[in-house]
Image 1 (cartoon, rainbow, N blue to C red):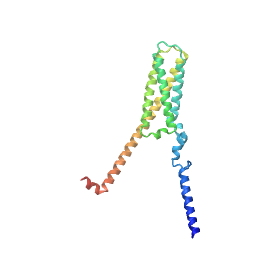
Image 2 (tube, rainbow, N blue to C red):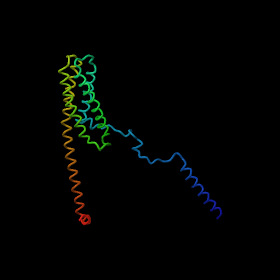
Image 3 (cartoon, one colour):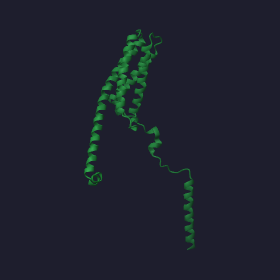
Image 4 (cartoon, one colour):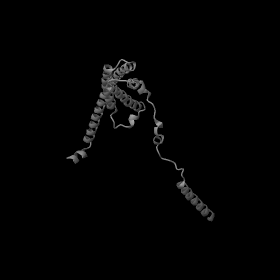
Length: 208
């Protein structure tokens, strides 16, 4: 009996020691989700978007805006310079904004910010870029001195205008479809809630 009591005491001391050592050990198992520990490692490129019409157009817009900006930057002399500065601002802004949207859409980063209406955001960007690229190209064509860099900048400016115009048309259609789907989802949700209320008479008695 004494041997059994000593054995039980030894086991209790061992379990207590293991609990203390486990609590003080720095190598504790983590419960942090895998997705949080990965950070940006879980990002994947969306080839379907890049192969689609909107993805290809956005890549073309970034390239054309960049080439137009490079062409306008190679001009050393200008008189007057207002048209050149305006074209420079438009091409640089379009390149930066469209490039950011391309990264967000191609990596599906926009899915992590559902509070923003990305279809409307893309529509506004393409619409404004179409308008300002068209105006800037016309102004630069009217005020240029027929140098090679100016002619190239105007050419790529009109090409970018065309790419943005087509993208605006497609973005408008996509935005309309999303609005219709949202309206249909809201209608279905409202009908479902009304049916739930009708099927629960106790709620109606409380309301009355």
